[in-house]
Length: 73
Figure 1 (cartoon, rainbow, N blue to C red):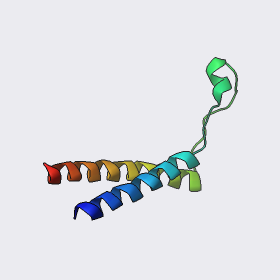
Figure 2 (cartoon, rainbow, N blue to C red; figure 1 turned 180 degrees about the vertical axis):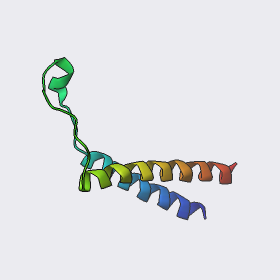
Figure 3 (cartoon, one colour; figure 1 turned 135 degrees about the vertical axis):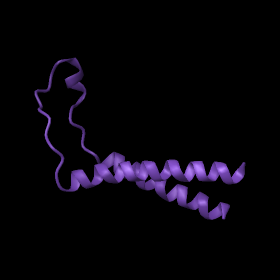
Figure 4 (tube, rainbow, N blue to C red; figure 1 turned 60 degrees about the vertical axis):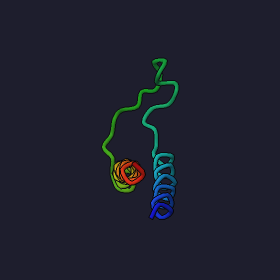
């Protein structure tokens, strides 16, 4: 049980890192210093799916971590 839970956590973490790295940034470093006249746009298509996938995976990872903590304690 403990091994399967650890493997599940590793798989979820790897998928979470991939989805976070795949997201596009809305502003670059130049926007922090007053540059970059980009406007906010709505997420559509694959970008929206990746965004919601990262939310679901982060909640799933949190749940797995809490469940692992409760089993060990």
